[in-house]
Image (cartoon, rainbow, N blue to C red):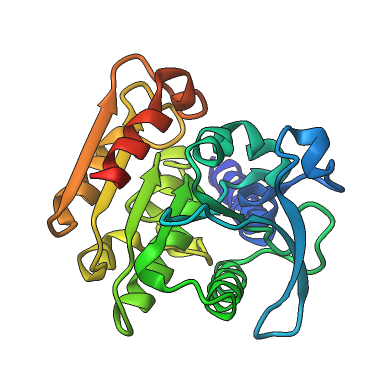
Length: 266
């Protein structure tokens, strides 16, 4: 019996160690080379090349705003690449918004490997680009989808130390990535093991911009209660929606873009 217990402990230790070593491969799921903006359904967008503070040159997609309209900075979730978000940003382009689809390191043929600090650096490069175009933060709508919500909250918090943002929109956000990991891996000490934590719950009250949060009430990836906790922690003005019947990846089947546009207009 003692030998069996020792073997079980050994297998468990190896399993936990393996999860620790490959955790970023489980978190970040990029796809390779991208289609063009035109073939993705957003022919008015163009690729731009931006250099991060740690020296990586990344490709994002951009279209400037029509006069008097805001510019959305879109941080995608953990899977695929920005070409797969073209259908989601189509309504915002049609509304005249500027759009900057953020290309992460390691995604869509970009160099580098994704990590929490790396994605923050990628986001700062996008903000620097907009400032270089003469587009001030007061007209930015920082949009974070799922994992991208963790990036959006961090950068919105950083920006609040310097100037106000137009708005922050969080689609299917989490309180922290460690909380999500604990849900999906309850049999290991996930909160201790995880490297990239994206602690949005500790930052959201430092975001000085109107905040819009939307979750599906049947989200099986990120429990909707995490979005509710984030909403409660955010300061006013704020608006939250928990869409009946919606899951994690199909919120745009429930006219979410119309809700976002109405919030931004308001």
